[in-house]
Image (cartoon, rainbow, N blue to C red; front, top):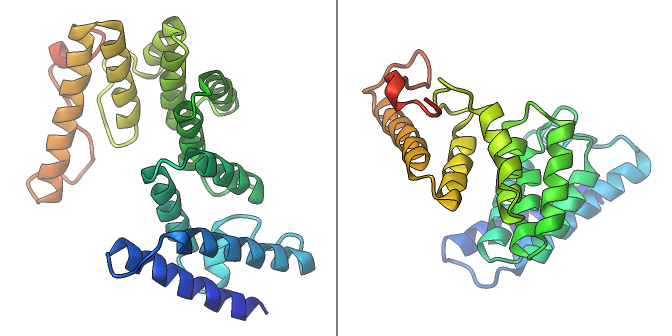
Length: 237
């Protein structure tokens, strides 16, 4: 039974990617594939309660034939692109409840959930969710960035400013680990009308993007993905 459903999942995901490539019709294959995946997990857990407790175990147990993790990322992106925010929220909540997320990282899913809440006009719920997320994971840069956006949405600029000061202290360079919070900070300064700090955030992001392009084309230093600036260019100086 499980093998039959995996085959069904594979056929449906193939249709999904043909649809993306413009070679197939109808986007319902995404939702159908997701439902089949849920059935596979439910069937597995009916016999073995700990079956696929972590998301990565689905790929590990099937020899990475189906790329479940990658397909789920694409599925969430597809829902978000179509602005189906109620469905996006539902799927995010289901995935967060479906796995333990002790070894896997659920930051992308939580970030999408926060975005969905905001896009649905549920800014207060978005802020509440993000604040709890940040309390539970104070070292998570995604939680910090999401909280900045959520605080901006509920016009709690003081709270957003505190997060920026804490997570981008003076002298902090923009790197691959924290560029998301520089982007959130830029939005904050744009909203508050602080052109000077907005410009500094944008310059830090632009310089980092430039460095990445040079690095990827062989013109950068491959020792570390980090770009340093003169002190006058750094934020909060």
